[in-house]
Amino acid sequence: MTKAPAKPAKQLLHLVFGGELDDVKSVHFRDLAHLDVVGFYPNYAEAHQAWLAKARETIDNAQMRYFIVHMHRLLDPAKEAPKKKVPARKRA
Image (cartoon, rainbow, N blue to C red; front, side):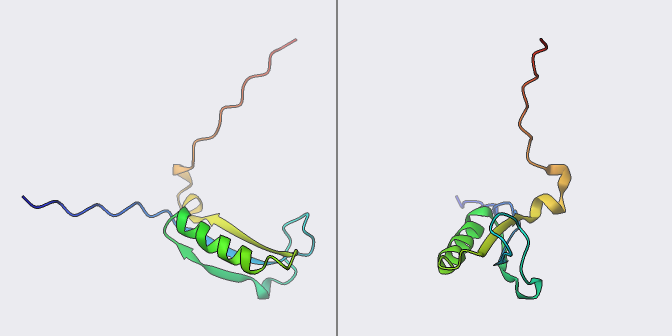
């Protein structure tokens, strides 16, 4: 009896990019022409590995920041992650 081929994992597209910030207290890039697009990844685990490598590579530059963008959420907002329920406030 042969096994059926494994179903490929669902693709959840992620983008890793970074650049130098004007101020570490905000997300405003110093020069958009110098953004570093690390790459697109099929899942969060691979994107996180790439992000971590770049973050470690630039650890001596406090202004440099890298980010992971959940592209799959932007491309299909109807399948957005479930939101946490906020408890109702009690009336006094």
